Image (tube, rainbow, N blue to C red; front, side):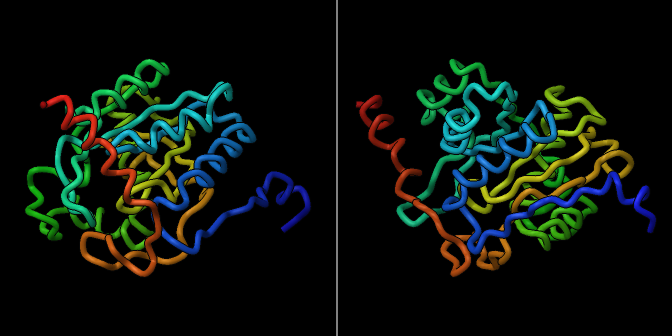
Length: 236
């Protein structure tokens, strides 16, 4: 390869976290912000089931000029060490958190997960979308989520097909993965979507069903039960 042919090559750092999960959230957001500024990327997608990652992102990206789009889960629950955790920022349990996000001028997207359609039964691989989901899991849950929420944000009109954006993802709770991707709508996924750069991801996968607890996952779970006090008082 000639010197001219290598002139436009990128020699870029990739961070491989020792653990998956919430413990990486702050570092991941800072790396995503710094790469966005370096590449002059204007939009960063933040997945957030409870609003905690979204609030942390608002602090990290404050005054950066970078537009954040928060993608949340439809209302549901997941198991946790101290009982079920409600997920989906639009749930009443997260009313205060949702208001903080909106007051900060951040858009919240809630939509159908493209790799979990009605044709998919439970978590089996009985559909093409199920196979896509399982295949992306080979790169880690965070990679799968980062790709999925990028598509969801584009379908919702918050990212333009063909644009380079940064999309983040996480394993169970928190953020541990960031990618530069070329956005596409779900129906053009195989034609247009591209993973262009890996900014950071965990080096080890989480194999435990339900993803918590696992020797390769680390994070502070107590914060995911903080909603209880305010919500219970509201019901008194």
